[in-house]
Image (cartoon, rainbow, N blue to C red; front, side):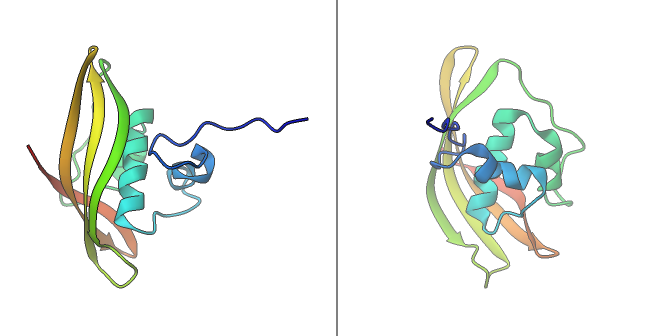
Length: 131
């Protein structure tokens, strides 16, 4: 009997959600790089997981809450560039493009995000929008 295939993770990697971003969302693992954190945060937006987004946001820039727009759906993530962010770094950046549909209208968010390591864990600090 064939084993059922699990859907791939929304972050764009060819892994099932449970083996990819799901382990970060559940707290059973921490994202090892800013890119992994960016992917997991994108996936958290697709799943409307405010608790994970707030937990992985730098305390100095974290909003008090997250309101999700019910008309907005995320349609894909493309990582364009990463800098630093290895085990030897305390900071890193990820430039990405996230596609979405807002009320049926297609759009994209293009951003260069900054990440810092706080108490051993990567957190999102802020981002600069790119036109």
